[in-house]
Image (cartoon, helix red, strand yellow):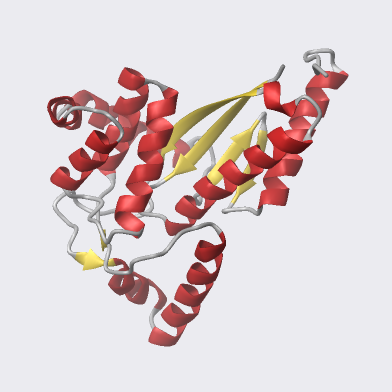
Length: 231
């Protein structure tokens, strides 16, 4: 049995991270269904903060569409990007809502880290998925305290705990440091970036690309005698 350690450098305000989140799930399902003994393998997810936008915590009034226009300059370019997002999103079961409000993601990252520390990896991963959906499909505000608390409640965290987690300044400082480390020391320049057993994949990737990485890591481990495949 292999325990895959998968590190994800993501930012909840990144649409391609949402796509990558779904792509990774699809690749793991494919691996478990098709690779001999793959259904017995385990997957450990480590979420590493990354800041795409240098925004102040109080910002959060700009819509996703306005942010895309500010970054890309023309409506024609925005339309092309939206068309691509809609096409890829539909293939992953995502319906993008461009009224979503963008802004600082520090609180979102704090909530993700706290979920892992206090409720474990399964709840943390579920929270990440719920957060993406709130922001990108439901027109939510990634920087709004009440909406983030609602995400936490959706995955079984009490309002009281969620508020306490979000007020933890020490974890907030740790998130800032982790984000700095990703850019300045680990060489992460874009998200999503996914690391699987020492292999680094940049971008949302397709299912096949992630599947190849999983198989490569698995077969390398088998070659050195570190795993036995049950049949």
